[in-house]
Amino acid sequence: MKPKKVLITRIIPDVARLLLTDAGFEVLEHQGEGPMPQDELIRRAQEVNALITLGADRLDNYFFSQCKHLEVIAQFAVGYDNIDVEAATGVGMPVSNTPDVLSDATADIAFGLMMAVSRKMFFNHKMILRGQWKQFEPLKHLGMELTGKTLGIFGLGRIGRVMAKRCLGAFDMEIVYHNRSRNMEAEKELGARYVSFDQLLKESDVLSVHCVLSEETRSIFNQQAFAKMKSEAIFINTSRGGVHHEPDLIEALKQGVIWGAGLDVTNPEPMLPDNPLLEMPNVAVLPHIGSATIEARTGMARLAAENIITYYQTGKMITCINPQVLS
Image (cartoon, rainbow, N blue to C red; front, side, top):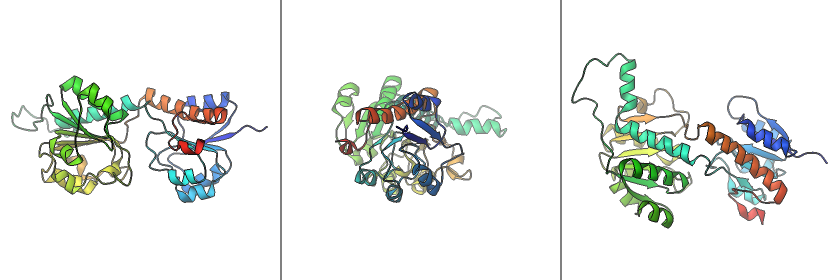
């Protein structure tokens, strides 16, 4: 019997290939830089049984119409807005993701961005590079302290919960949150208080976004939302760039509607180097590095491979996002 073939659509940590090979799979890896064009992805997918995909791969309804033969897909990410899960489910194809293993790494980035924005660290560092650090100036480039402030979490899941724990422990921040449903366990552990979306906007000194990107959340942080926030509020987004409307965010910062922003995700990605956000003193932007630690990326690769192996061995998956197709 021929071994099952798995295509990994980008170079990821070796642990995925080693686990799959040891389990008897034939592993193919795309060696090029960046994501494959969709036509090439489809062509290569038609030659294999399973895929390990990344967030830049476009797996839409057309992809699934051309690749119905695929047996399983493992996403190398927590988010899966690049995958038409309904279309995958329609052809009976299970899809998994990699939650938990990157929660600490991504929460650390959110926490770091909050710190960087509150003290204008990126801007002040650039002043040194530009030769503008001349003397002590008591009233220039002042930041704000975070102790005792209110942290608002939009999406109090795994990553949001770690972020809340960091802020509670470091700055004794009050935690408020908004979810589709209440997180009673987090309320008990963190003393978190569930509020409406409007109350979240009004009460948060720091508002940190940790939701998935969906039709419900796309551009939910827009002109109307920013207008309801405190003028001294900091907006943090480490989830997906599409959750905030970037022109509205730029205008809110220019007009002083909110105080600052820290972004690990932008809309679009990659951000162009002439984006005005990059020159604002109260903004910190990173190139989507939330999971960029050795530990997190290794854990993601391991879990993606284990999802495929478990599927072929048991008919189940460890972290399936459409489990109805398994039954």
